[in-house]
Image (cartoon, one colour):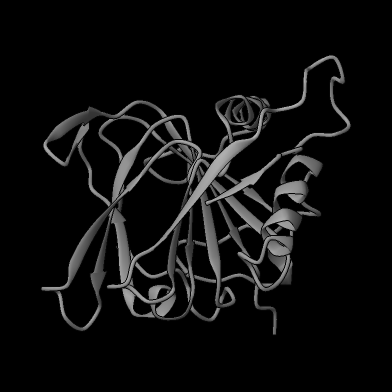
Length: 215
């Protein structure tokens, strides 16, 4: 275990007392090489601040769920990203997180593209592998607001299927085999069963950080 002190928004209201040290527990799932899961990556207070930033911005309704694109817009139908889809630099609140992911060793390069997804109870995402020619090896996703189960299924052996509970404030990182050989999905339902306990879903927002491949 490792203690660390977060300072996501150093330029904001200085009357807010510094965050208390939080415990960061990291789990590497042996069955899925390249998958890392970090509990309590950020605190509840930091989640609230990030959600406040998110909710100030414009939501797109291209899909059944609401989304926001930063850095580059991703074309879901064409599964494509190029320079014509660049929408500018990441805002400061996302840039701080992107740099931290790089400095902490979770991403080999600073992300230049972030997609924000909102999942209401009963919403999910179908099994997929993030576009290989669009994004570099490592992808990191931060969960805000609510828990959910994410299923991982091997693309060549569908009998290999593992659920991972994503808690609020947690970070999940996909690289190597987890990035290229495993599909991930969030089942469409309003609650999850985990270790015999039922967890009703609430509003969940994910921030997914990626490095674009531009030819």
